[in-house]
Amino acid sequence: MFSVGFITFESHFVNTENLPCLSDYNWFLNTLPEAALVVGDSGEILIANEMARRVFKSSGDGFHAKHVGELIPVEKRDGHDNKMARFHASPEKETRIANSALEAVRGDGTHFAIVIILRQITLASGSYTLAICQDVSEQRYLVTGLRNELDQERMLARTDPLTSIANIRSFRAELERSIERLSRYGRHFTLISIDLDNFKPINDDYGHAEGDKVLKDVGDALKSGLRSGDFPARIGGDEFAVLLPDTGFDAAKQFMPRLVQTLENKMDQSKWPVTFSLGMVTFNEAPGRVDKALMLADETMYLAKRSGKNRAAMRTFQ
Image (cartoon, rainbow, N blue to C red; front, top):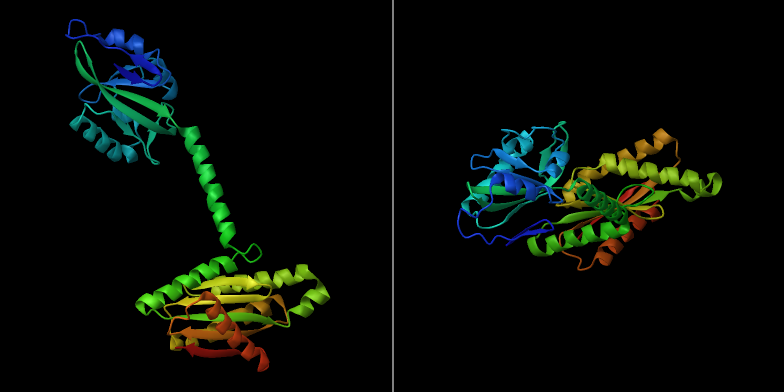
């Protein structure tokens, strides 16, 4: 006895005289709620039930003398052929061919997502492969949609909605990883704290909508002006930070003028009367905690502010 879809077919035949022939089996396949094909040893399709004709949009004798591989897009056939080869190596085992990339092609040339279940059957004229083909396009569409929604939610959880750069939560996680790498492997890093000078009068005189435009411009400048691998974030209010992984003091010191120039150019383009105070700390020794690293960078930045604003203060921690 074996099951196909929701139909159970009982086989109590013990010799070839009692085994069903292809035509009898064709009748049985047409009772199945899923697309079904009987395939010969060389891959030719011998029987296709009515549901298969609907699923593959093949009318009349569209399956006649067709090789089963023709139902798979050319660019996907290698993976399908490998699964078929494994099935033929152990035909006594049912094989389910299903992965996110598996597709079939309809008679009209359109592609659709498919799951194929293979099983060996024995009829009066010999052994064949029964292929149950399930159109899973709708399920895969729903799964893809849910996955995209989850990805979007994860991105929103890590991103500052105003500036579209990392938020404090995401930045803390990245900073913690840098501290861990320094502790384990001695890979130093540099942390830069950035605070906007003269930002409060913009909010007071022009409103928070204009203030938000300034913050967006800062975010844009940080996204465009950093090196690959650098990690900018909005910490909160008008405070930003940049993590420079695997960057020692000398390299960070050389990078600072470029960063300041990028920020100033953006403010000049937008005519904002804003300057920046920056505090740069290179960690040659792990600070132990994320909060301590942020505190050291903030203290260094406030040193620049107290020294007259519109400047950078730098130090090392070791």
